[in-house]
Image (cartoon, helix red, strand yellow):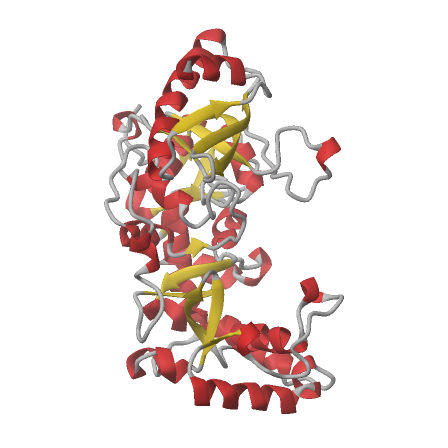
Length: 402
């Protein structure tokens, strides 16, 4: 396979570029910040059956690490990482927060409209801001107010919680870290240094900077792929995409089997895809950038993936919280894991391989996955692995733990 220097790519080229761009061809990242810088953000999720989703992409790329390395980078004044709505709720570099002023301004404009929640609750919001000014960063539950009672809508949010979240989106408050996974809300000046609070750049320039990072993370992608990284609407960033093409940052290419125009980030022009030898076997978070846009995962890997958290148990096919399994350069299956900390066991609730795998591929995948689960077990501080007999990969996998 030759170097990437033409206007067309094979499906294999595109797959290898995607794996290389995301640090999943080989382990090159060494620290938490290495991975965050590669992604531009780290999506946060609260589900903790196996492990909260923001810890897993780090493990997939750097192997066993101390989770307190991530925790120590958040909270306090001018932390290395802060929360905002990037892809979804995410950790981002604190100095990158001004890149999202366009999003914060959008929420402020909505809040100023007649009949908005903010206008109707202006007195409550003023009181909340005064409480934070007096007390410092606070979790939602610490506000003693008659409107801080769970309701029947907005996931049971009280008006206080709802106010805090809307102020958070608009930038009137920022994250001050977390306490037992509860977000602390703070005034910007309590957390951010002046150079970050006062950084000015146009919305257009901010979007260009975000798109540059998004295109680099995708390696090669459609406008939808690149837009999805920061939750842009594809139709809203046509001028920015054209500017990236005009600047030579995005190189238009066609990809075998892709119906839409693709763009290769300039950092991968000249990349020798033949020299990329994907060798990792790892479980992936449901919110890993490799698979978070399900349409892209199907297009590149032929892997149809959905999590079944919200599917009633009798209708689930694969399991409550299945994780994709990457083996070398293919997504070969999915596995439903649970960390049973009380009994010191890593439970494989179910394990499935893709139907098109040959018997030898299934055997090789099971062997590599079993070795990887040994690392997962150690990372989670557990003693052994128990495989339940559900799924077409379970028996082959269980044989490695007899």
